[in-house]
Image 1 (cartoon, rainbow over the protein chains, first blue to last red):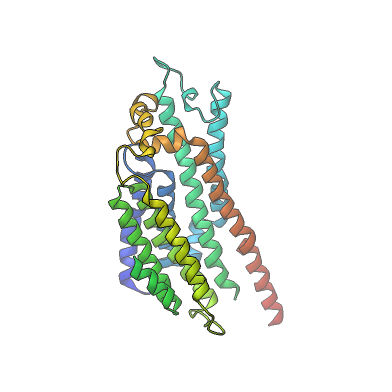
Image 2 (cartoon, rainbow over the protein chains, first blue to last red):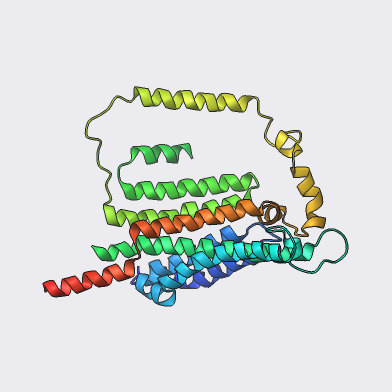
Length: 145
Length: 177
């Protein structure tokens, strides 16, 4: 599709919007529909669009497969890490109340918000990286023939 | 949706089938939006209509664009009967379910009121779906993330990490030449 100027221009035009929308869905997930999974998928879709337009090699130069594979594990580790951080800060596993010092009352919404933000980012990172990894794995096979 | 599904079953050209399955996903996403399940609709549109279609197209370029015809026409009565009976039982099972959106449905009586009442003070996040997903059901979501992680692991193990393999192949080609 590299040669088709209409597809290329529209793709390049849309790409920042797609990635931006993914970030919006990611970090605005507390207030509006969306969250880590949706954001990760949208982000991965954006990268796949770029790869369809500009070719796999150029995409892999920008986003090397090794980096993406690291992202797969890092997201999950972030999630589990937040869980253990809660554990070590005196709460239960994944009990975000413990993440920040308590205010008044038995509940701690600020800790919850921080925990959710981090955990959702972990989910988003893993999902995006997994989708791109699978895409790389499928489309990379083409070169083997 | 039913038309799209039937067309997918009847058609043999895989390109059309892939496009139709993408359309099917998009219609599902619209359906989910009308059911107010926007989170699921976003996922369906992005995964089902977007990424899956691309992956299937990539697979098609590897395997060929035509479905092989069945070697001999088989008798289709038994599978049809199984499908009809199963579908009949499923429909029968829905008969004594509460009406869609009924306020006294069991699903709205169990933990949902507590989430709706307490989320603002306990979690302090306006989007209750996010609160339930990431905080109340944090374990579940961690498990789901692990599932996604495992999926990538499986694909990598099956299809391999392609960089080193390609290099080896290039070397082999060079020796042949």
